[in-house]
Image (cartoon, rainbow, N blue to C red; front, side, top):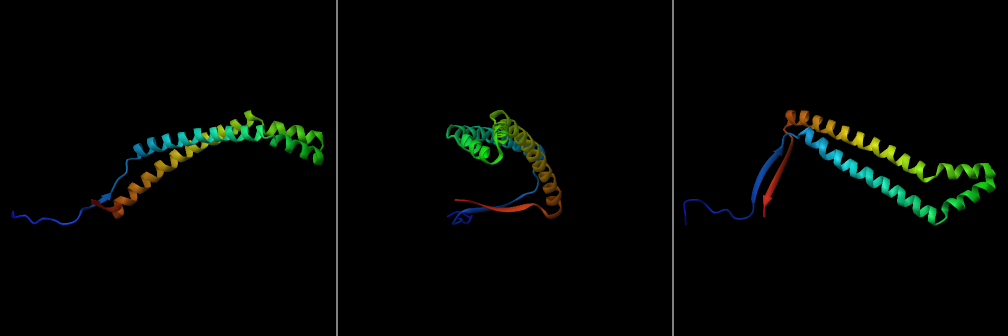
Length: 128
């Protein structure tokens, strides 16, 4: 046996997340929000395509023409056209990317201020 004592069980290390780099948070959030925006547009396109192929818009148009007359039914196709739906989706996606990026960067700055006061998150990590 040597002079040092042998440890039994896993090693544990206590660490603190004292600072988060706002620039890296901004880059990462921008990429994730951009992927979410692209997914939103693809989902809107697929949903519109499914509704169009199944004849849902035609059924809604015929039901609306019974209640509102032919003028109201024509407006339904204008409102739910593919171009208008995708344009709305792009606007929502762009606003979402801007807001998510700005809010996450602001949150990381606020976290850094708070962690300088109280020390950040303390983690205990084990090595199995």
